[in-house]
Image (cartoon, rainbow, N blue to C red):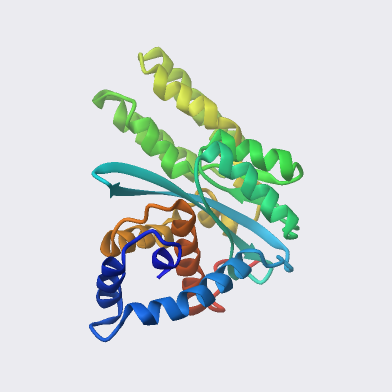
Length: 278
């Protein structure tokens, strides 16, 4: 619907898409009638004021791979998902583009719309995201993705080092203090440097500064805060949905479609279900 409205696909493609989504009775006229109204509603929702304090904010990235005009293209989607004082999740923003451009823009957007009360941002092991948070919310902490860090390190070590790396991460996750966890990470970094795995050691070193900030919050929250994996499912489902309906060449339209999907999930699936007891 959004693709047709913004002129990116043919009428025949739109008709086929309508049939696949809503059955043979759906028509292009139906899409043309409702899409402008839906687009305005989504855009207004993305510009709404963020009235309630968001104690935690998850910053999540999802790459959407598409084949457009015979060429492979990867579009990165960025989403901010807040946790309010009542523990309910709320979609705060959705953008598409390159990380070094989107993260600063997304932080400015959230701040202008009134995001406040945030104590911890939970995101990827992305220096651009970390820098954007420090610039616009200097009093808040930033937490990287411990699970993703483990995967990135395992991709950069040889078979002999895989079990020790996995064991070290288990020790870090089981640690009861940030000092203990940081000491284990430093020891593993030194070991990998000695074993001839400089790329893995550099990966650990670059992410060390923001891996254990979740320890500053209630212990009951730790399992939900040490990475952004619990939020990954919602954008992964959108990626699979795009594979069904076909490629979306316009990044702006792709972001609108993702926002519509996230908005629907927040209302129909999350509703009033608490994600955390704060």
